Length: 121
Image (cartoon, rainbow, N blue to C red):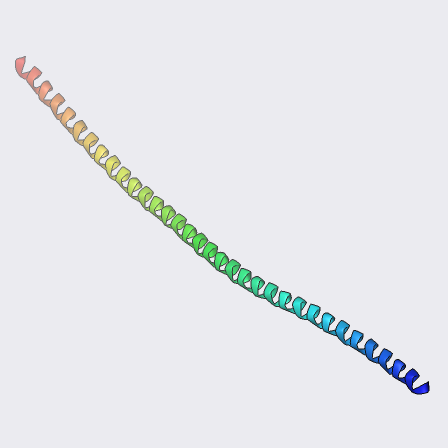
């Protein structure tokens, strides 16, 4: 009786140990799945980060190009304004010169007219 009791006890312990081992295997499998999922998630995040960094660099480059284009447009506008102001100065100087010539011709014409009047007398 005692042997069969010990055998039953050992059989029970063996069954409990098998159950624990089975439970441990299931937990291990679940943890391995979680680890695999975490690795996949980390890899996806790394790819997303790389993509975002690339986009950020493109945006920086685009912004730099826009700033440079704007600066170039402002420089061109300033140059155009300078050319216009120079031309305006030239035109004003020409006008003043022509006004002087016109005044000279007018005075000469008056002198000629006065001389003709005096000759008639």
